[in-house]
Amino acid sequence: MASAPRALTKNWHLKLASIGLAIFLWALVQSEPLSEETFSAVPVTVVVSDTTWILSGAPSPPTVDLRLGGPARAIIGLARDGTTLRVPITSVGSRDTIITVQREWVQLGQRAGVTVESVSPQTLNFTFERAASRTIPLALRIQGELPSNLALSTEPALNPAEVAVRGSESRLRGLDSIPLLPFDLRQVRESGVFTIAVDTAGLAGASVVPPDAALGVRVEALEERVLESVIVQTGVGAGASNVVVDPPTVQLRLAGARTLVTAMDPSLLQVSVASESVRGMEPGEVRRVRLQIDGLPPLITAYPSTEVVTVRRQVGPAGGAERNRP
Image (cartoon, rainbow, N blue to C red):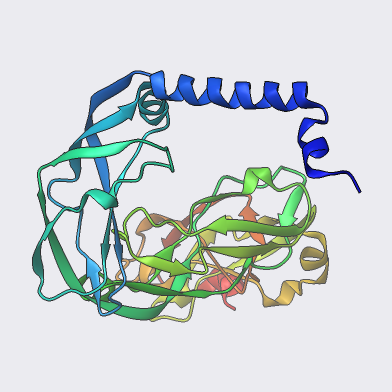
C-alpha cells in the first residue's frame, strides 16, 4: 500500500493543473458582470388548491413587472426563455380577495445568482365562484362529406358519450352539452377510431375529464339502387279521393352503404303528397306541391326523379283519381 506522501505526489502535475483550472473557473464566475433588468408584462398564473372555489376570470391585473438582478448571462437566458409569477392559493375566504405578491413566487428556472429585486404591483385582485361538478353529454359536430365512393354503414359512435366537468356553478348550470372540436368526414378513408378533443374555448377555465373522446366510424362502399314506377299517394285526408297527381309515379334512386341498400325492403317506402298540401282545394284548382318520402331507413338517401308534382282537384266524381289512392 502506497504511503500518504507518495499518494499525494503521484501524478502531481495533473493534480496541480486541475486545481489551477478550478481556481480559474471560480475567478471567471466571480468576475462575471452583474446586471439588473426590468421584465415587463410577466403573466400571472394561479393554482387554486381549495376545491370548493374556482377562479372567475383572470386576476387583476393579469401581468406584473419584475426587476431582476444577477449575472448577466443568467438574466439574458431568463429573458430568452421567459418567466411567470405563479400564485398558489390554498384557501379562499371570500369571493373577492386581495393577495400580496411574494417574491419567491417568481419562476426563475433554477438560475443561480438571480434575485427578485421588486414586483409591481405588489397586490393582485382575484374573484372566485363556488365550484360545481357535473356529468354532461358530449355534442358531436360533423362537417364535410365522405369521399364519393364511401357511405356510413352505422351512425358514428362516441366513447365516452359524456364527460365530468368541474367549473363555476353559474356556468355549468346552463350547460346541456359540451361540444367536441368539429370532425371532418373528408379525412376518412376507411373504417376506424378517431380521437377528438373537447372544445374548451367557451368553458372559461373549467376542467374536463377525459379531455377527448374516441369516435368510431364504420364505412362501406357506396351502393345505388333504382326503384321504378313508385306510386305517388295522395293521402287519406278529406277531399283527397278526387285529387289527381301528375306524374302519378316517380323513379327513386337510393344511395347508401352497400349492405343497407341491398337489404332494404322497398315495400316500406311511401312517396306521397301531404294531405295538408291539398286541403281546401276548390274543384278545378291546380297546385304545385313537394313530395314527401316516408319509411326511408337511416343512412340511406332517396333521390326522386322529381321533387315537385302537380295536383288538381277534379270537377265532379273522382273517376281516374282512384289509381292514386293507397
